Amino acid sequence: MTHPTDLATDLATDLAPRDARGLRLSRREWLAGAAALTVLPGGARAETAPLALPAAGTPFSDATVPDLARALGNRPFVAPATNDVPDTLKSLSREQYEAIRIRPDRLIWGGEPHGFAVEPLVRGFFYSDRVALFLVEDGVVRPIAYDRLNYEAGSEAGEMALPAIDRDPGFSGLRIRARFGAAHQDFAVFQGACFFRLVGQGQEFGVDGRALLLRPADPRGEEFPRWRALFVERPRAPDAPLVVHALIDSDSLAASLRLELRPGETSTAALTATLVTRKEIDHLGLGGMQAPFLFGPHDRRGADDARAAAYAAGGLQIRSGSDEAIWRPVRNPETLQISSFVDNAPKGFGLTQRDRDPVAFEDDAHPWERCPSLWVEPGEAAGAEGLWGEGAVTLLEIPSDAEVNENVIAYWRPKAKLPGGREIRLDYRQSWGRESAVAPLAAVTSTRSGRGAANPRRLFLVDFTGDALFTAEGAVVPLETVLIASPGRIVEGATRWIAHPQRRTVRVAFELDPGSERACELRLALKTGGRPITETWLYRWTP
Figure (tube, rainbow, N blue to C red):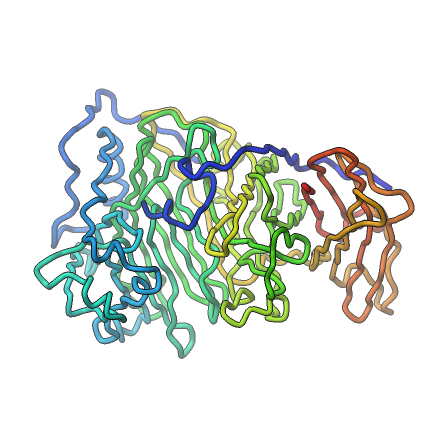
């Protein structure tokens, strides 16, 4: 056995989940309900008057929303009212609410050459935040107004719930359709706190993006930044991206976010953010994302279910600043688990769905295999000393008893604190679709776990797949196994390789003896001639 270079530190913390603080996802109600640092102008005075949003006909530029964020961040935070949603809309079930859709002939920009169409989403169900929606056409702002005639209720309850033309329920966000080749499909949704999601061609919504996270799974309680206004620019050419500008507000900061969206087999988003801090921030999450993981081959805890698996992302994928490729299968644990993968200037990370065969799930109602992976690449402009410099990719695994709970959360946590009264700019890029390739390294393609030869041992089967494992003639290359457990021990003599040349796969089977430990960190990789030829498999075992 050889020992790997310690490029990532995995820290375990067991905390009791608390619904009231957002540490446990009970359904999704809680969702609804660096670069240079610049000091704000000296003598700037905190204003108490409400911030005025642009009126119809106001000129718009890329500076408009950052200017709004500066103005908002220089005022004390005022929580907006959320108790003005009509009871008939608030009491709709999920199915009744989601059945409310805009009429196809009333889609904003429907049929235009650029191929995008916008659907405003009314408030209702547990989406109580009021989000101001604007179009930007020919360089000027046009507010979007509610019109009852634009909507199909989809159910008798929805018909009764939608207000009349002269009563505005307010919007909770928007849905965007896009052209993928010759077909059109739902492409993006901005709704709930500051959540958004995209898909690639032919995919179904799965992982959620989070524009900003503040104190997630923190004993002080999580703070949820929220959309306040969304501005959507009309594309000026058929091949142009769709640009969305977002204004975000929270107790600790105000922010603007510019997203340049391009649909494709893998859809992309280029993001530029301006953060204006009201208070010191010591727990910031960037490039955040979350997805449901109920059970899978290595973790069927409490799963009395006919399906083979149920999850939108099977693992956390990381490409560290030193170029180590890491795969960390995710779990549905008994207690909240927090893992920190310490790094400097990471090249990328994301929640990844590698299982693309319906047989992996055997779910006739939900196509988990068509959920996108989400990969984040930090912007180069931030540099090693910016917010994308020292820090940690952080993974939260939260106990869940239902597949609607997005109980796996990943984000980048900068080491540096952000002082109050500062302006911070940063950028990054997202890819929504197929996983980020690890070739020429062999990738982890399966993780399975079960009872070992004797209690309390656990048997693990880890599959690596890739051409790097085999010679041109199909023989396995000379392999060195890097396998360690801390704490706990690997059972001597129980580790073996099983080669499947036709699948270009090598399985590593081993047994862990945790002894009396309640958590063990496992690390596995294969080398040849002293150089890595596989991803590094990391795993946290808990009972």
